[in-house]
Amino acid sequence: MGFLQDVITIVKTYYPQLLKGVGNTLLLALTGTVIGLAIGLLTGIIRTTPFSKNAFFRTLHKIINAVIAVYIEVFRGTPMMVQAMVIYWGYAFATGGKTLALIPSGILIVSINTGAYMAEIVRGGIISIDKGQFEGAMSIGMNHTQTMFKVIIPQVMRNILPSVSNEFVINIKDTSVLNVIGVTELYYFSIIIQTQNYKTFQTYSIICVLYFIMTFTVTRILRFAEKKLDGKDNYTVFGSQSCPEAEIHIDRKEAAE
Image 1 (tube, rainbow, N blue to C red):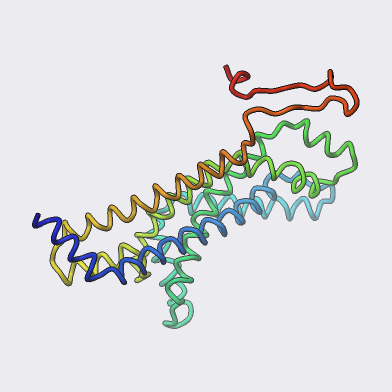
Image 2 (cartoon, rainbow, N blue to C red):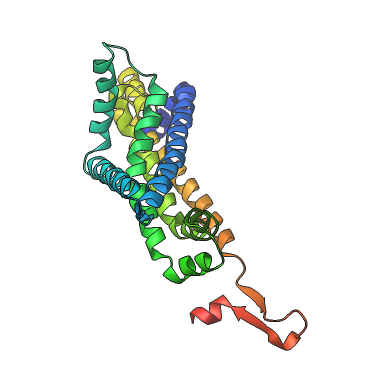
């Protein structure tokens, strides 16, 4: 009963800080994932765009591809904790001691880090689409941009949704490293609470449960969204609007078996 009583007391005493930590953690993870996905889409499209016949644009495209490749390798090859220190204190060094606001700094760091992973996820998603769809879109007069945004990207988004969901869950946990620059996320508050009550095990047990609740809830919501995007298990393909015999009834479960 001593452990349980300590846990209840900590929650009652420090629930405002715990709630603020949960809110900031979700804000950092969600915003960072969305911006990171946007970065991934942009870089993924650029890296899969055919080279122009114009020498200038072809050279520019190669340079941009090289910059993107360096960005991906650096941010995938170094820990986010180190990136946070370099970006936050690097800005202070460059501006003579001025520092960025903490929450925007955290969002920036998570977004850039996530974007490096999303870039490869999106590129893989684009490459996985059958080339016949590119050719079909081109055959009806679509240019590359129209093909990407009207035909390819909608399919890519569906295909990479599990990976994007996974990155979101990872970001919820990885925001804990931002405490090294003072970002007030959940782990940051756990340190403050523990130094005030000296109940280390009880405090971090509560934090562990809160992280699990967040990741478990987010995972279930995103899986529900995936199922909705899959559509119905049974549907009918109309081969002809005037001939009922041309209808094709498809059952996904039977087709999978």
